[in-house]
Length: 102
Image (cartoon, rainbow, N blue to C red; front, side, top):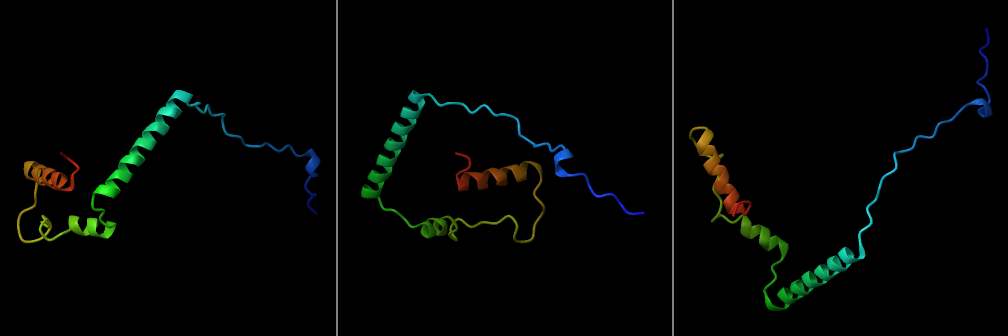
């Protein structure tokens, strides 16, 4: 038996998938103005810091963070596994060193 050819394209119903409409908030002019003023003020502060202070290249900043003076590892050496309060103390000490906690 010979199969029938598919029906012509005119008889097929095609559905177009569409996403739901999205409400895009309109930012009021006052908020836009404030944001632009804040951006200008921050860029002026950056320019002043560049003129007055010493700017370190990124590789020196990273190198200073990983200096041997600060290096201490809880993963090296023989000892017990940290648990409970000890683990929290070490975690908090690391966070303080990295600036995550004040």
